[in-house]
Image (cartoon, rainbow, N blue to C red; front, side, top):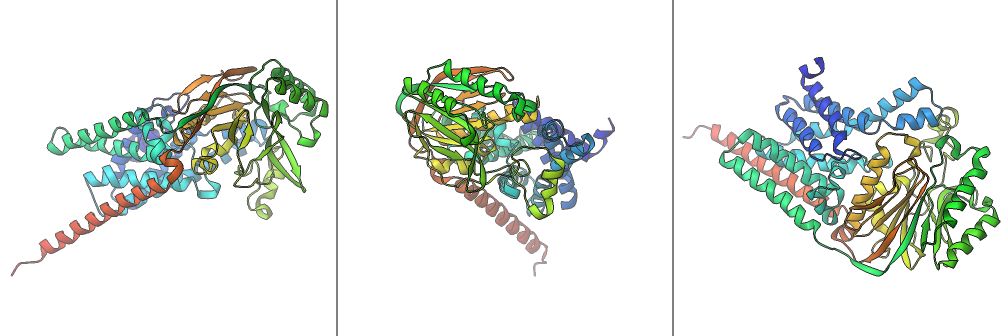
Length: 506
């Protein structure tokens, strides 16, 4: 129990507990309580440096527990030595823990205390720096507070302000809870309670609004989960078995839209056997439909992680444009190239980016906005294809992360993309989580992980724009700026008045 004898230990423990608020656990009140502990510790920190240290401890707990699955990717599948993989995972977590540390330091500089500090300043800075984390070093907006509320009333704010707006509402709720505890049933405490109820009640009402309208008729979909073990996926001896698995699973259904996972066929597009291509194309044409297939492509000497189509529509392609550092491209190649080539054994670890603006794929009577793996973490990038796109589609392979919570967290992230866009999200994955998510962000169907199966269901296209599609993150950033400007101005005014009060009156 020595960990709990100082504030840093409490901050670390609070950060560790946060993981239970996210999928697969989904106990969304836990991050609110964990953040309440951090806000309380920040409130009594005597210096900005102490507040930064508390934020770092909280972040280290949060990221170590929440994304520890990257150790599996590096050690089990990337062949990195065990101790080096553990060290790399710890350093990765520590790097991102610098963002909560910065939040702690920044909030300590705001010239306010008491109610405004904990209910507005801390929440606004927390949400702002979560947004900043989505930009830093190509972005890492994983475990953003708003994702824990994919199934809570606060999710109603997503179509207006995106996931960072949900984070802001959650963080303000945390501040109100802390203030309510401190003020108890005083007049100010009752006001905090009423404000808290209004925020959550408004979120619940917003969830009932249909921001978009159905486009076309419902149609059948088949999302294929091949369950190819990661250690076999790029094994040449297993290639024939992999191709046969996907051939068999496609041919056993007659859906209008069939989808295979990311790099389901671990080949370059021109290497896929022509006989297999023709068999798949002819089969889906008989149903008047199309199949989307994940593979690699080579074009003018560059290699891409891509999806191509076969079926009634002409063949089309989507190329992944937001790549994963070290997993799909080498940052600072002259300095760090040895890391990929000499330490990690990751196939196709140096890919080219697709164009940032790619038209939706015209298949199955819909305009489908495809995103591959990590791309659906960036809501501001997903809406580039809107309002033209009528359906969202994510193909991924989270087998890299084994039995860690990462696959479930990824599916939860997709729920927010559906809410933000007012579109259904279809997810076809190698080992899970394969799912159909409604335009209201609710998971309608889902396959268990680590089984070979086909998820058969119905999908519906949608047209129109949510406020978030029109505004992107600009609206929540403007709101945060107004909150911080108001708090700063008030704090300066109060400080100035205190100085004047100390001047002797003649």
